[in-house]
Length: 195
Image 1 (cartoon, rainbow, N blue to C red):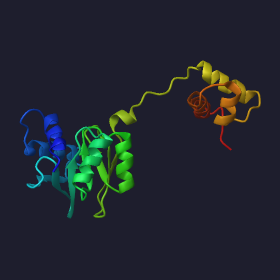
Image 2: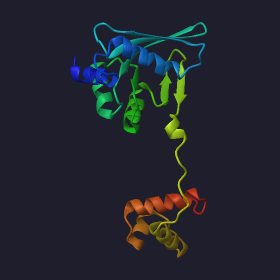
Image 3: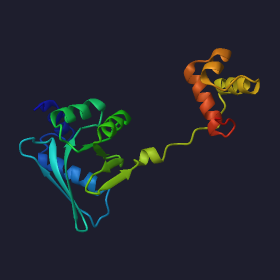
Image 4: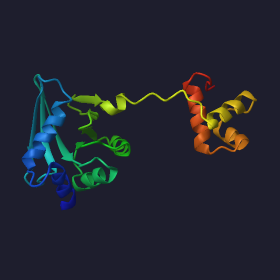
């Protein structure tokens, strides 16, 4: 087993943290995503200390069981290393799962949950947990300030240029990113509509 992922995971918990402490942390993360009446058990696997856990979630009369693994901070490299080390992992747990790690896990059909409050777990036993993290829900609204590039995009559209990234970019000399952002903001403000 690659000890760097385990050591990194244990280091996140502080010096000399035990596998039981990580199991408690994972239990707390999972428990925060289900009603308080639901029982969550997390048991470390002895052959994979600090990395892999058997999870049992009892909701009413239904028992949901799956293999979960700890992926540290939740960066794509951490997640890929965990899946490589434990190919049978069914749900990945991390501090804050990155957008790319989430997308990669969803492509593989592997569930995930993180301490930031996000989750996407869909088990064949009927367990479904889908949550957006608080940070994702409370994103600040985009300002209505019109930048120079947005004004240039709006002016080009009003003068009859086809509102595509390529045509506006060519006409205005703006970067592809500035053009796409300007068109997107005009659309979000309801001033431009896709046809």
